[in-house]
Image 1 (spheres, chains in turn cyan, green):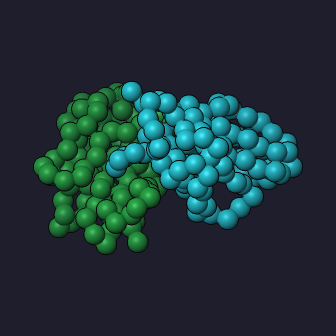
Image 2 (image 1 turned 90 degrees about the horizontal axis):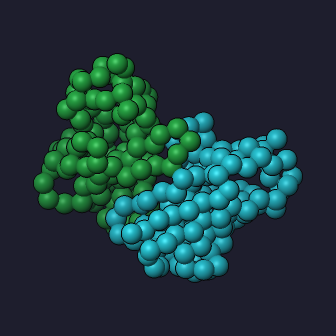
Length: 110
Length: 115
């Protein structure tokens, strides 16, 4: 069966510091991968998606970036965090119709 | 373009009563429709999906949803609510023409089941 992992689970970072969040998927190959941000426990905002290694599409211009160095690894990064980057970050994978989500990373920027 | 509306921010039901969480959608072609549930500080869990076939779809934890093409709705239902069903519920839609399998999510409905 397929599983998706995210780490860290929680992160507290100062404004201006760099960020790296990691997502890995097991039990499948060549999945589509997605990064979402959820603010205030409500709606989901799609940030990036990837249909293959090195292929990244950005949905919202901002100071975040994403990379896919391996088939089942998706990384969300920032060179300098802003206060507004605080939120709950969710990674998801899909191979057919549905998307399946990881446990999420809670990021607090102070 | 595809869109989803969940008209209720919150739904309150008593334990043991039936529950309905509403969802309407808009797509240019035939839709794929989904329901997810989110517990506090957790990721979204897949509940059920409609792709084609029977309009009544059964999913996890006793939930079901009814696809109504004429009303462009996909309401989530459960015959008898449990306190443990209290969570945030998201409806999502994908247009079949969407090559990236991108889902559009509704804003979420908080379900509160009281004992």
